[in-house]
Length: 513
Image 1 (cartoon, rainbow, N blue to C red):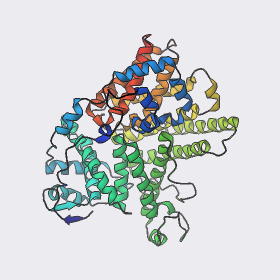
Image 2: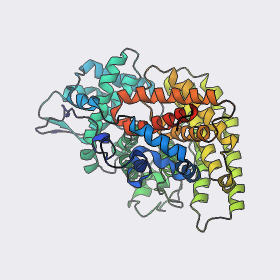
Image 3: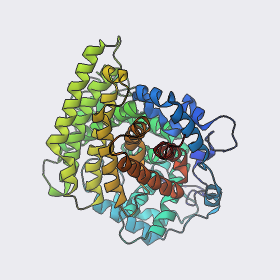
């Protein structure tokens, strides 16, 4: 937001590789202890993403208690090279030269593609367009917030560009990612309760997740919540003078009274996405709720925000309505799981069946798969894909949590069918994208669960009908993951686990032990 005159080298960020692997304890092949122990070790689960087992306890125990699984998994994991010369060579690559006009083109791409009134950039476009010039002035330093917003917008802008080739993306996008990561500590050390910093938390949370940095993204989410609460996002529809929680600042209710309905709708829109993100962290990583029940009073917004129904924002509105209905169902599930004392097993299973039916009703009502076939750009497609993958994951986890399914010898057919459908849709969507190597957080957040379920079923039932098709699907996922990890060094620990699962299936499918 601000520009100060100081002696700074910030305009030339250090060219260092991402620290996901260099800080990890699981990378070296010569390290003592088995890879399997590391997967099961609570201290490494976050980096490996295997803490998705939090809501798959029954399936997890069946996997790790299966001798064939453990032997094959240990063998498979030793075959995967976590760290190779690519990391070293990447650190030695000098920063790419980003021409000023090229940067401005990417900024224009971003603004041309993101016209929706929700999640508006709190910085003027003219200011962002001036940053390439400011970065050339040796004694000028941009504040950290402006820098992280600028570099994340460049990254999104190049993703949306039709003029840049894959080679340019492969060089520039990792550089922009690393630059944002290098700025993170400084930014968090100066973060304030401002609209600019709130927006920065939104984009940096996604950036951290994209780099497989779960704890960092969790830390950023906590800042998102505290800033949003301080700015009145938790009390948009509360009574005047009524605080939304212990951190609500004095005078917040007056600020709310002076807001337009568009301002309130924007706050409602962003709050509900924040609540959904909080729920997804609880579901995917077993994190405690940051947004407590009773701490907020926020209605659903008019999904148009402005009251003007524009066809260009149709998929944004659909995504909001469908994903927030799913969020309400997810809240019920999480409250059920966290209930103390635990509900009677029969009551629990009956309640979960009701929640599964609600998810299925939402999927049927919005039919995101059919909507996906009508999209004309990647942004609208991503909205539909998010609804689909979120729904599939919820169905799998809900069904697996039922007490009745913990007493069966094999996974329920309906769970395996949903997992297969999710992976098939993933193959269709990602297999056709030109630069699908960025944005693969979909793999990490959604597709690990169905991949694990399908692999476990292959391992438990290697002679069943349709096994060849499932093995081919898993092999495709493994190949995609391998190709992605070659270009995204920071994702290799997580990708290694997925490839390990695929290799286990291949060994079992071929009769190997």
